[in-house]
Length: 210
Image (tube, rainbow, N blue to C red; front, side, top):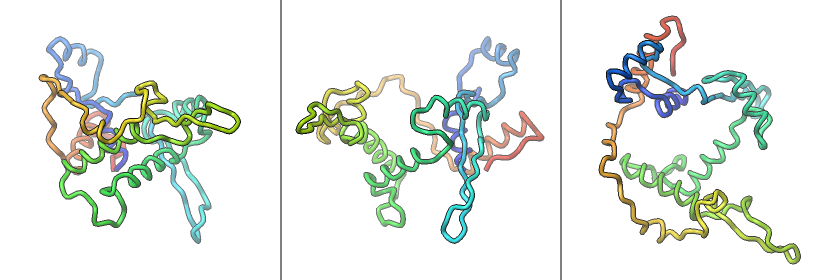
């Protein structure tokens, strides 16, 4: 499932790029496939075998991209020496902590997709602009120790203060007049069927998506 969602999110369909006739000719000459996935992206999985509640074996596999890409990324990382799910699981935990709609086995789940998306984006903005992360604090005095607490947006230089919820909700947003039309909501089965068709056309002997 993750492979299909990643392909659909980051990939691009040639027809949806709105190419001109000249562009189509260039695409044909260069052999651009119907569906294009950025070569810069690498997706890997970690599979854990358990016996008696204890992990006995860990298998890592590069699903999208090349093994060399994954190894280069790890070599340049200051945090990880091996493929792991620590960061994405931490992000999932943060989402569940701030967003009751995503908690497991709870009656607070979303009944409509539009409300679910709105609450998700509110949490994303609040996480970056309104929540002070302990690991991002700056020491401003040694004895006694004093710290300046920062949000991720402050650490990235995008804000100079901690935003309140009132500021976030009252900040005016003006969508552009030429904003693209919202895409129709698709089911997972529809996305999977379309991707499988594109991959079958490009490589009849290849594997299948799940």
